Amino acid sequence: MRSLYLLLLIVTFVACGSKPENADTNAPVVFAEKNDGEMNAAIQQARAGLDGFESTLNAPKPNQTKFGVKVGIPHSAGSEHVWLGSPIFEADSLVGVVEEVPMYAKTIKVGELIRVHRHGISDWMYLEDGKLRGGFTMRVAIDRLPPDQQAEQKKQLGIE
Image (cartoon, rainbow, N blue to C red; front, side):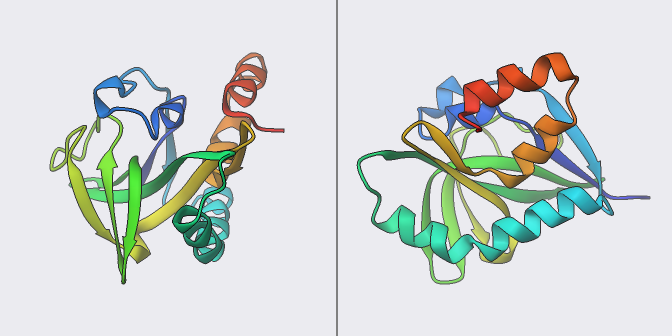
């Protein structure tokens, strides 16, 4: 059986950094095959910039807010990628609060503090002066939306 990456496109990301009880349960869902070249390239781009993200997270400027990290959570049919808020790096792992309702990964729930290995990180993001930094998988997912939805999503997320 082919493994699917479940990528929750945000709008949910707007919830990162806010209280978990405000998690968006109606966020659009985007499915990507495990061999999706564009999505895998976005994940690699995020991982390549992870050290820089960690440095920014550890010493944010006042104009840098809403830090989040997307991680893959295994389930019976593959992995579901969900956003964690309030991320903290610890050696080879990351601790964060689940910010969205998982559809398939029933081992986690909104508001739960979880620890994942650093290699499980698939994306990261924050806002700087209201503009999205990172969010590489979100950008790919938004580009796959119908044209009438792309502009609104980009505006909401501060994508230039």
